[in-house]
Length: 247
Image 1 (spheres, rainbow, N blue to C red):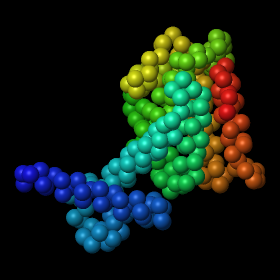
Image 2 (image 1 turned 90 degrees about the horizontal axis):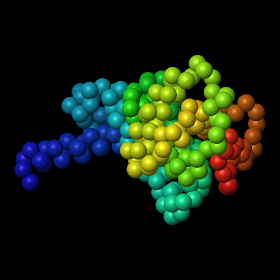
Image 3 (image 1 turned 60 degrees about the vertical axis):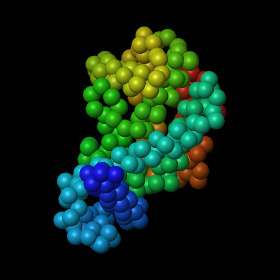
Image 4 (image 1 turned 135 degrees about the horizontal axis):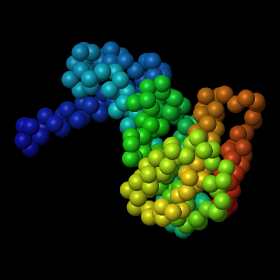
């Protein structure tokens, strides 16, 4: 091993140690507790030393959010293992239920990634032009693409799409096509009408909204067990697209 390679390995290990400690602080005390000073204290180094690895606290949080998204995607992929490839409806339920389970089990990580006021840090929500810029979005859209490819939606879904959204939905359709194709799923672009893209967008909004309300304890009324409500929502989402809603 060359000296340069050894330095690179040691640097990578130190970066991982920093992010590991940052995540521990996040989980135990929340985002505000994740400071370079606190991390340095736990690692037994000076705070200025951390700037050799991360430009700022925001840079560190951004990298931490990437780690969290990767872990979420890995967990969702594990949920898909063992499911028949042709049972795409089951895959949709597995991904959506897995997202809810993960959010409830990781409230601080969920808050950092999905409820950050910083668009850069909220990387599981925001996507760059031409791609979906997060691990969860890629898993979700990969499964959605399989579902659409296996069960083309019923015609007539474009009728109720607000005219004000046509341009935005057309742009997102290209993002969706690129993302799904990058995941090895071939979908006829003719199937992805504005109505289909509109409903995919609505599905994400409703899925995220339900999970966020649960994670943050913000349901507008007392619900002893939100799970049946969540499953009914999933069935409605599939039904709205004219797709099988078997559970």
